[in-house]
Image (cartoon, rainbow, N blue to C red):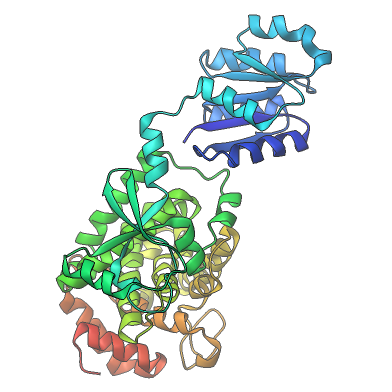
Length: 447
């Protein structure tokens, strides 16, 4: 994704350029705005942009001086001046010291995009990525029930080539979908934007808030590969039935596919993984168990399943700011200071997710309430069952299983069962019986 730096001490101009670039239908840009030459240099020293658009008349450092300083750092970054008729006298000097081009104010959007295309042409790989990243893969079974198709359905023929099977809002073609299923076609594709609208995941708000939160494509790919390895080696997934394994892996891939397009939440997950591999494996395990519990209690609506899975994945976001020693220590062994610091992760997680924007309220509240219990003896508020959201009560059941396994190096189904049996023996009344019973069914433990 090309990184573009806009420099102008006139904020309406920077806002206009940002809007033009965001509305480009061909590609996406990482956009940074600043309002002085000095601020631009600070950004450039941190991360070199791929393209710079700057006003030529600014104070105290004007565009000419900024260009001098930029060329001392890098001679090849395309540098474009915005210039008014009154400033045409400066053109010769600007070109002489290394300006690549200029655009005369007032300008239109097409002129700006054509100028960027001249210096940053779209490669075939970029075109393919932009196309493929518009879609996500989802289990065909999600669309067999109901009256209307909630998202347009596509089948992927080959790389970057999709054929529409049905339109959003059409009656569900049950016979056709069952026919696909009989032919072992388990997954279809949907447009990410339509799916996010359907499940209440607001990508537009995330897009507006993530301007300064970018990960390059290589780091994104590496993190997704890392997630898949943790998923298969460090979570309960490896001990589940093959049908569950396939569905969970697909659901994880789909969720990460959504986050790839808007990296704000991906950065939060990566921060958790960087702080502790255990904490990240725990988040993945909680998401898996929560999803299976939801299905067991017949929460079959896709928006609900998505919120449950995302809640499990993000519930421990607040842990990313704690020391690894605290994260990996059994809570029963905390001293008073450690206990207070650890218990603060629920409030901090809620604050972080709320600031990220675009998330369903249930997901944010799950980060805040997953350590509350039905008897009112949890934290941070000590509220009782009636005041805890249903998804938070569900997450609490999945979460406590892993919490009791801190320090276990090789997790297996027997570890999860042993942990659940301890909960049933000593803390059964603290958890919602419906979800706890469902977890027992999943792990094959007597309730």
